[in-house]
Length: 388
Figure 1 (cartoon, rainbow, N blue to C red):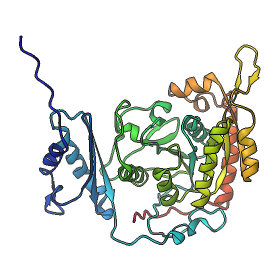
Figure 2: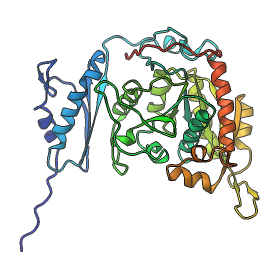
Figure 3: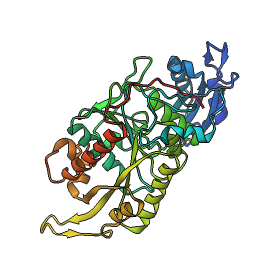
Figure 4: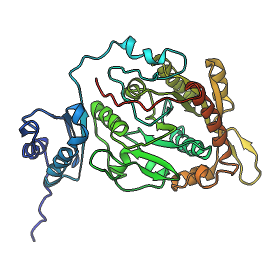
């Protein structure tokens, strides 16, 4: 009886060998000898790497990125490949103080017409807000999705960016699948319920682990901002990764955020981490619009009685202590959880329901903060400037 042949185990050397057969026509040599392949990672058959290109030719290099992916995918034993374009510049970075100057004048975010080294602008997007949390497990994505939908319900043109590279949840919550289309220059966001969305979850299988290092994550975040055809938006909501690490700082420092929303649960351990999130935005001169208390209480489906499982009023008290707005509390409700998991968020499918009411009220307050930050008139569509 003969044993079945053993599956091949690919190596990083195999990846580099495959990539050495791909030629960059502009450089006149293969991508490996040209030195533009960075951060090759390989884990259990899943490969990832970045391709460093001229910032001015980022969109033109999409065929090169695809060719590199296809070359590596052809290696026996490779299960998935994720390649991202990294656009760097030889220009020196601006001093840290001046990089923050755009946020130091009132609550205007990045003033109209201002160009800053390392700053990225998105044409047609009037305001960008970050929905963040100091730790995972507080329902930040549920709040971000329903906030985006509530803002749309209030008449705003809204986009939703899933910036949680390691745990993307927007595709499932928004009921979307499949890779987004591209016109050769820009990626077309996937849309549902009138919301334009983008997530790394559209690029990889749901059960595929993300094994990228920090620079690749930051590159992917910037690409999902600048290489996506967001069109004309009143507000782009960013579902931030949990915590206060490199990815969060990259967004806070590189993106002209109009403001931020912090999500926490009532218990003290979550509030401690939420304070870190507030401190991060304050240090990067991003206005904190306020705090949302999620899972504030549980409503018994039988009696309607409220039970404060995680404590009562912790986020409200923290907002008072920190001097920022308390945006509202969202109950721990089975319907909110079920509709989010099922790709039919309550604010989209039943915006007039009791369960959706907290999100609508939170959205009204956030919209007020956005209008105040923009001076009531918004700003002209800025020009993309990617340097660093």
